[in-house]
Length: 432
Image 1 (tube, rainbow, N blue to C red):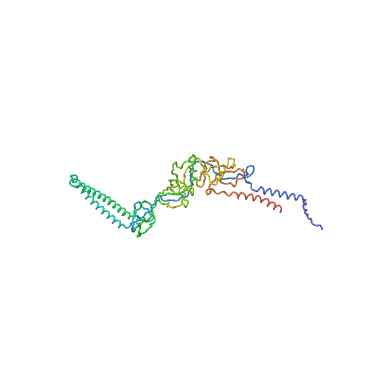
Image 2 (cartoon, rainbow, N blue to C red):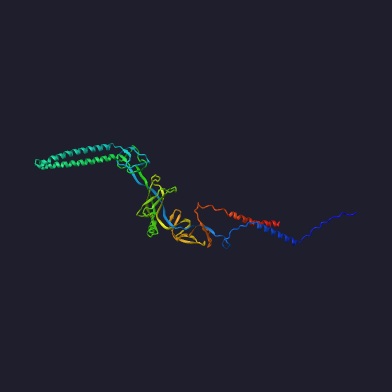
């Protein structure tokens, strides 16, 4: 019996251990190359000579022009005219004829005092005057009658002289009577208390039934004229002298070309009063205790919005600077050694530059000298300066108006992180 034919499978030869290691290494390199080719292709731009790009700093471009030099000073409002209404006639106050807190006109009746005694005195004075006029008439007639008799020697000269003296005495009595009537009329008019000026009257200081004017002029009310208003404020004498010297040297010119400097008021809530005022005068003497000079300005107040005693801030424009420059305050470094700014050159290099500050205009300094038109002054980004490394100037915008920066940093960092993690994953996979 024959056995069935059986196919025998021959196993392939086992490669050498060194050849197996070479194949594994080649496979790992191939996988790493493929993973590297799949990584991000965008990289951060390189700066000069392959370094970091120049840091961006905020700058403003110098543009000279005529600028008004304003000074902000504290002040108090005051009524332009103040009158105290007093009782000039003694008596009982019978009536108040005005509404407290309202506007009154000059000559308007305010109070009524009992006028009975003054009417009686006025009538008595009129009677005395009438009697004196009658005596004068009789004396004059006697003089006229004695005159021809004295010329004819019918009466003695002494009788004629006595008649003339009686006539002169009668004339004097009439003059005294007229003065008494006038005095009585004045006292009678004092019983009706009127407004001495036009303005706004305050509260009544006395009530009906009070005895006023007994021994002194009793205060009854106060009237204040509040259109226009005065604002009193002080300025350092050193600043005033410095400003005058600058005008004399031609560095500054007077605001508006006249002595009336422009004045603006800032109210307690920070708002600006709509109507401008004008400077009236500055005091001729300096306060020895404070070193301040008192100034006064006049401000129109037709609507009565401003009240006496109100605290305000006064913006006073006393002079104008020609070819001056305004810079944000953070751009100027002030020190006892002098004022300076950082100027960005055409090559991006930053260098300090001494300047001359003339004053303040709002939140900016007024620069009188030290800069030229077209130069770029650094405003922010000072923390980015690194020695002599150049910078890139970009237009500066005030806080609040600066647009929001684009969030580009996180998107650029993400591919870098994934690229860095890819070789590690490949290596771990290869080791497995």
